[in-house]
Length: 263
DNA sequence: ACCTGGTTTCGTCATTGAGA
DNA sequence: TCTCAATGACGAAACCAGGT
View 1 (cartoon, rainbow, N blue to C red):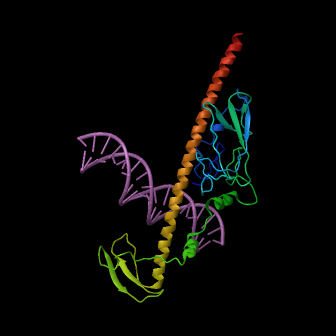
View 2: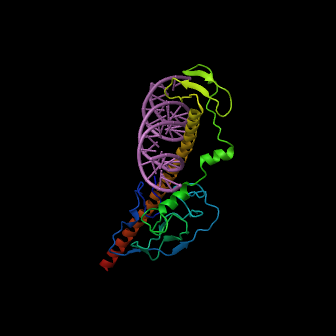
View 3: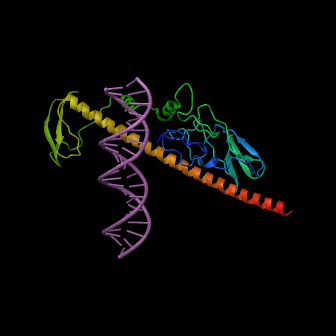
């Protein structure tokens, strides 16, 4: 899931390619697209509190990163936002369509200008992929967190483990200290083995740590995945609106053409 | 109230790719 | 080569809606 999502942009990267990435460039390239629209609204996003409605949430480790904040804009029904793309064959002149040009912030991975630095296709001093990774995933390691918490002492003996119940057997317990052996084993396949000796105790501790980390990683991964899907759904809605507007426009142009023809 | 099939959530394992 | 974070796959448990 390395694919990046850009609002109305092209999806790049080796990950799951944006299934909708080509939707905005499917218009015939031969004839310039004249839309009955009025104004172009250029919007530079302020660094204010984010809208609660935004699908793309800032300040979280997210698949979809924003430079700072994202604002949602409520438009009256029937209006459509076109995110400006220099290469687009769609041009606006007058009418009810509005174009948003979102000025990219230096660190933003979200590009609405038809270009993105979210993958290898972008040349630069540093690997964009690396930058992306650092931005998205760098956080204090769990080891560091555990150290900060004071020693990473993870208990390996569950409550009641000294009883010989449910396949859990006590062999022996030796003296305290760091090298004190935890001497238990389980006959259940899925249970962990607790075998005497500091080295194996260390192995057990490492395993617990690994499981803890992976648990957290899985949670985070699922959160990102949900966010990604949300964003895709959002894009579907945007593109559907766009499609509707284009159909309407085509209709009116046809009517206009027929009128002029009969005159 | 109980059953059942579908969905969601969570933990774990295996694998992969990047960085040291 | 080793380590580690990310993620797909899988199974188990929880949850929910509809039927009886």
